[in-house]
Each structure stands twice: as C-alpha cells, then as structure tokens.
Amino acid sequence: MEAFRQHMGLVAPLDRANVDTDAIIPKQFLKSIKRSGFGPNLFDEWRYMDHGEPGVDNSRRVLNPNFVLNQDRYRGATVLLTRKNFGCGSSREHAPWALQQFGFKAIVAPSFADIFFNNCFKNGLLPIVLSEAEVDHLFNATLATLGMKLNIDLARQVVEIPGAEAYQFDVEDHRKQSLLNGWDEIGLSLLQADKIRAYEAARQTREPWIFS
Image 1 (spheres, one colour):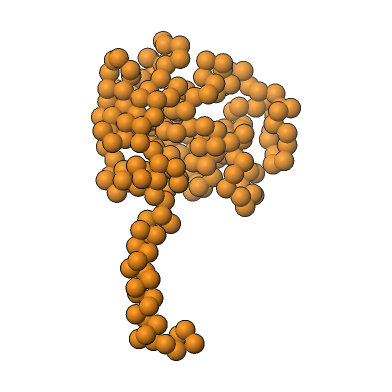
Image 2 (cartoon, rainbow, N blue to C red; image 1 turned 180 degrees about the horizontal axis):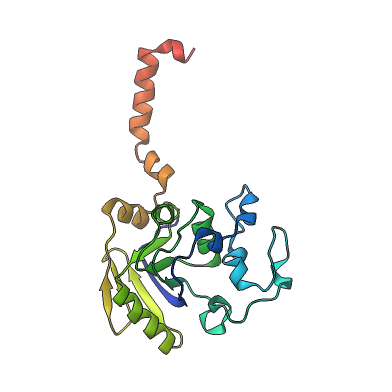
C-alpha cells in the first residue's frame, strides 16, 4: 500500500449528502475479480449521460457537463470535499478502489459510513472528518477560488488552506501509523514475520505429526 504522509491537491466539491456506494461505483461494475480498472466508472450514473456497463469504451460516452468532476476547473482534483454520511449503503471495497483509481488521495466530509470509512484506511485513502461549519467554509472557499488546493499533513493531523485557515482532524493512532508507513493488513502481519517463523518452528518440534 502506498504511504500517505503529506499531500497538496486540487479540491473538487461534491455538494451532496448521503452518497451511497452504489452511486460511487454502480453494482454492474462489481463483476470484475480484479482490483483495478474502476476509476473510469466512478460516479458513473452522474458522470455520463447514458447507462454504463463493463467493457464499454468510456471515451465514446457523452459526459454530463453539469457534474462537478466533468468541469474543467476541477479536472485533476485529488481531494474530494463532500457532505455528511458519505459512503453509506452496501459494503463494497470497490468504492475506495474507484475513488483512488480516479486520482483521489483524500476525502473531507462531516461524517462517513462506518464500513466505507474502515475500507478507506485499509486501502491507503485518507477520510478526514471535519465539523459541518468547517466543511461549509471549505465549500465556500472552493467555489470562490479557482484552482483551490488543500494541504493535508497526516503527521500533524492538519488540513490547511495555503496562507489561510488550518483545521485539526482526529485519526486513531494505529490507522495513522499504518498510513504513514504504507502498511495494509498483510503488511501489518509481516511485521510479525520473525514471531510467526519462531512459532511455526516451535510447533513443528512440539507437534511433528502435523507436518509429516
């Protein structure tokens, strides 16, 4: 998993509450057994004017000009600003995969659905909870400022508008350390590799019939 330490990125404002995982990546795209290729279909029903299906050439589809991610000023955004209860609905790890593969590094919202929130950390995507008043201020600043960027410093747990306001956010220490070091669940297990090998060696001596 790629480590997350500090990131400065363009902000895209998705002014919608209760965005569910089927809106993030519609169910028809979950047929794939791979962990890649979901970015082009992020928010598929909102980004395109037609119904999307796996295997379709997205470059030939008509984009919805009114959807925020299709607007020129937000192209290349890596920080998603949104409203409360983001990621609600069904449990699917494909949702953070799609957001990451589209290019997002962090999401800022007043609240997240629990399973989605956990899945973000497991995949190196940073979900940041700020108060509704702070999120409102960021929306106003983003809409008023062309090319609005945020600096996110995980070590200091700070979101900053360069040269202006800074907001502190909370994150559990074990999640923080995992992101700072790029440790996913497999990586965390491998930190105990010496103990695992010692246990297996001792067990082979104690219970040799299992290994015969």
